[in-house]
Length: 304
Image (tube, rainbow, N blue to C red; front, side):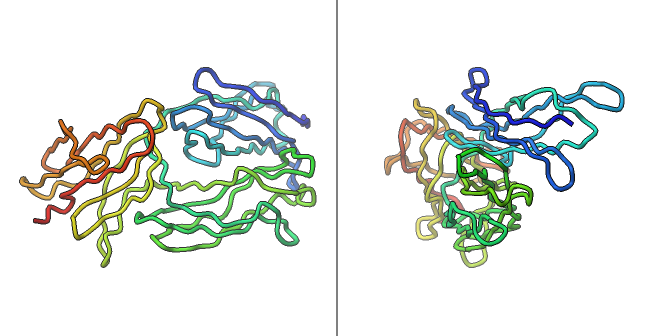
């Protein structure tokens, strides 16, 4: 088995996706762990597949191992670690590299508050903390990831916490993530700690045990997403990652043929509203100018 230490940074094409690699190590099961971090320096949200070229010892053939980052989506300005575990049946032929990227049109919900220390806790030198859902939407299958560094700042592991099956609005739940036993004594601090919901966010808590399915598509940061029963409206703040602005697509169930919605941007009615209905779904395309803007959509439950 090839064992080495990689340390490099490179940019992937025009997408401004950066890959960096830390120190490799052999774990207690004899597998070579190759770790690193992907950073999104662009203005689009990306799903990233990392590749690693290896040589099969048994027949001499070459193949490429593939794995995704710990975060399903890497949003603009965010980063996510990765880890390959290589058995003794392979020799490593290359450094990890970006094999594929896919643009995704899912917003970043600014609703999860992480409370944790960057420094290891306890004998197992764990990352321990809590997640709080400060929004009005239900978050499912969420976990926390981080990079582990030694006293010199070198990345020595990539870790991921237990999965929290559901985090309802207002809930606080604990998480923990443990470095590998082989490097645990060298763990000095954590970086790039982030959270990753494995399931789409598409359920809004209306209160009183009522929930509304909806769709929201955009490369934007969404904050303060909530429903107001007194005005039968959904409000949120949108900040599009494209410096020129861009579209937020909003969808809700169409309750009947008379169901209509109205869109307001920064408390002003939007002219030439792009709204369509097909008998099942109401779809609206809302242009968000550069910087942060408030959006209000009335008529959500068709209440008169």
